Length: 208
Image 1: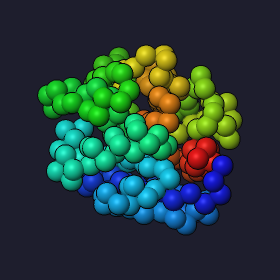
Image 2: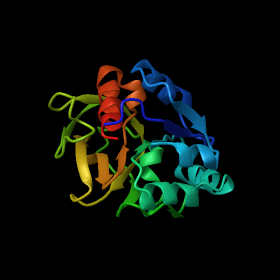
Image 3: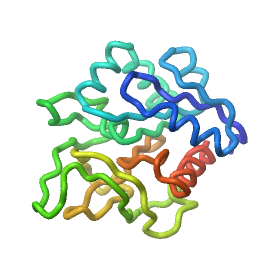
């Protein structure tokens, strides 16, 4: 464990970047940068890819800021821990059907599809929901069983059980968290999830 790792929160115009930065600083980490500069990404020990809004806009912004290759170099080749949040998690997929088919980073097998639910369940899913995890380490090592987190989304990541490490019950089993090696993603917003969100950030950063 590195006691004070440097963290870059990717600024690509669609993220809840400063809320994420404030949550991590609250935990006592002070080497935090919100940036889209390639040198900052290369210098970081860990990367956080936040995101709110539409998938297609997120993809366009990554491309326009020439972030696709530098993120791949650091996550896939250098194996730096990377955490995607909400749309940032969905970007890890092969692609999304939101606003027509748009290709993602294709780092974790699976596709992002619209929530198709019984009419008794509102779309988007907005609010608190408990999650069930199949793997605790490292994201959920500090949280109790079936912790609750804050969700806000209309699309969900359909992936295999090999990569889905947590889910929530919202009429169907909705993927809540994914992992492939050093790459993690959560559908919920830890920066809005109070104590459990802080514990998740602590678990992620302690794994470095």
